[in-house]
Length: 163
Image 1 (tube, rainbow, N blue to C red):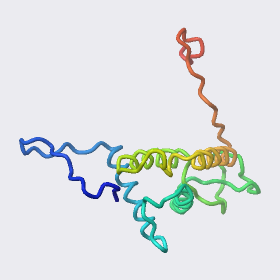
Image 2: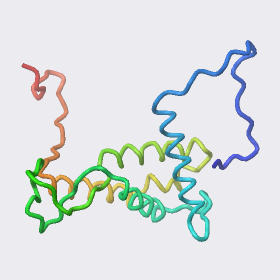
Image 3: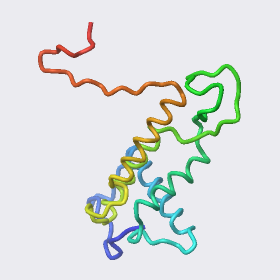
Image 4: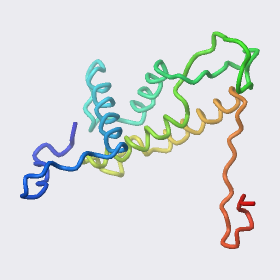
């Protein structure tokens, strides 16, 4: 799934050595890009990546929730706000915020690497950033886990946590 249909892969030297194996990040980015492309092709009607919008990205993120492993309690649940509830409940499993945040980062990079123009990157819109922030806040409240911004350490080390 590429915007540049006529490009040939770059040569990796004339010695005949196989190209180095991709890093874990590069492999995951390729898998994520292929998964997103398959998701778009399975839509009725299929959607080409050049027609993809942030709304399609949000639908994809919601679709992925069915495969999540993070318990997110509803506000009415007796375990709402407890990081380690003592018993099971019927609240749904969702994708964890950190996983979604990483996924969007990889897809944002893959979009541009595959010829997508940065100014129309559907993974880099304010709508996506707002969605991720809302997921983070909702999951933090539901699981009783506070997310606090880390303070930047100053040059003198006044704000560092070292002892």
